[in-house]
Length: 441
Ligand code: SF4
Ligand code: SF4
Image (cartoon, rainbow, N blue to C red; front, top):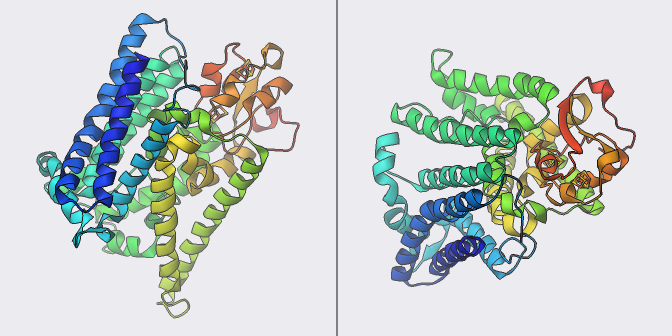
């Protein structure tokens, strides 16, 4: 079955690379063929490639973790097929985000793709949104299909763990309903396409003055006002309260679409996260730096709006634009997903997501959540550290019998699921009872 999975992944890479060559080349016919093949591949191969082998494997083996060969497969350990997959993912994001800026023989890639690829989904889009498909509908469909397909694979793989099943069903449901179906139906009924599973600072525009003017400018009788009010309450009330009781996992591992893709499609790459001390230091600087940047930008925008642009002129808007391009598009999309097969599945969540930084600060200082360790049972096998997607050296804590209270921990629970000795438990309790006697959270 491993060979089936490997062959399907190689086939997926080949088709996507073909699409990539078409982007770089000047042959329109090759591009169209590549584009069509990529559309079909993106939507169908994840289902076939992930569910089929997992289903058959599950019939043949008892329930439990199966990571056999993950460190020897060239797909999951930075071999050529893995690099090809990373290039394909990256190019997919480049085309989705910047297709209108790329041209082939004088024609924009966006235009060619609209005709050859995105329009394939016109029938579904017309029913769901009352409008033809575009790159964002295509992207949302592929993204949702990937989470559903690989989510099923995840459930099968970790079917011995109730926690893994529940949280995987949760991210699948939030993606399907809150990030795909509901925004589409809102468009169908001529309402703003609002994403109820994203809030500031991950979705910074929900706190930008222009968005409030656009959606809430006509007062409380408009749905847009209540949508933004909901997002505001989620950011400043629900997030601290839920994180206090549950840790940041309530969002990062149960709700968020970025985390959803990382936990499902990214699962075979989780061991690629770097666990070194220098990278941990870099992670803390960059992720908190990005949180600080979006706080400053949001404040500047509101000051500028309140003073009718007399203080900053276009400067604050340019900063917001810069942030949207480099952080919102390049970092979260192109690098965040494109580099799964090279740097692991949570590159964006670990190094770039301002929401993760905000949640992490609350988790570190105020949350009842911790992972407890029964150090006497630890055999130092290192499974927990190996499969921690956030680069946490879990074994280090387990060997000392110390609770894990790390701001970056997304509470995925995989460390606990792969531990052969039942050392690690995701628990809650009074903040003062956390057993943390080393500085270094
Ligand atoms: S420490 Fe465990 S629960 Fe936390 S992110 Fe790492 S694997 Fe997931
Ligand atoms: S997986 Fe379990 S036994 Fe192995 S090092 Fe981690 S805590 Fe110890």
